[in-house]
Length: 309
Image (tube, helix red, strand yellow):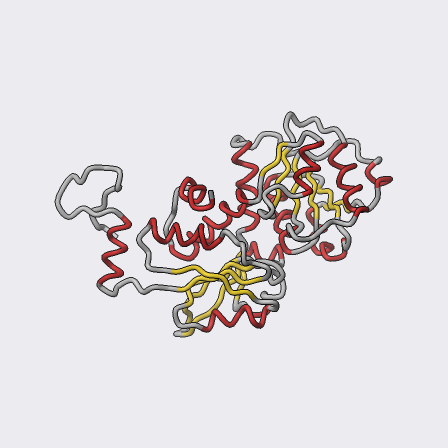
């Protein structure tokens, strides 16, 4: 605060001016900036790109922190990393986004609305460390669509969500913030999303029900993990919904799984002439918000694209 600072791309105007990276590196060297450990918890995560994203950002800003993977099959195992003295925060992925909630001391309004957590933020209260559960998935979804439609035009059109897990809840919340309505849902177990019905969900379980849709969706989000195959009946319903004409000039299909790069759902959407957005885009967008929540630093989106790309 109140420290003379320069941008690394600019010439130093006066002696003593450092870049943000150099300032953080100096603070680390003199012991004023402790190295922290950050984690991704969930399974399967061996091929996650999150370490590349966050460690690149730490390096770019001169922070001495480290982001690594913590493979965990249940929430009780996942939460053990928060007990470490150097714990700085965690990303939460499947299958823990809902089961991790009981371990949180408090939830943000967004996490409560979605009943799903993808970000753990430690904070000190009354001399004791507490855990705050937040959710940035919805920001990744909303920002991914906004990047293709910066003026936000046409957001009153209908939307489609494929899946019923914690990420699907984030998609519902993102659509509600975008003004998308109605929100069609294609999944095997609609009861898992019943709590989100206040957002105007319309569950579609058969091609016969699709025939009643007069205005097709302009926005679609697939929240199915990349290693999970959709039931053939769900695929038929999704194909039918995506085929219903929309008055929107462009139709955007967002994939939340980033491996494989082109999922079966994306291939289906492409075959029906949808503009597809790969999973690396929402991963980056939500990850940048996580980074800001953990560190207090704002970073250009271009750095996130560089880290993931």
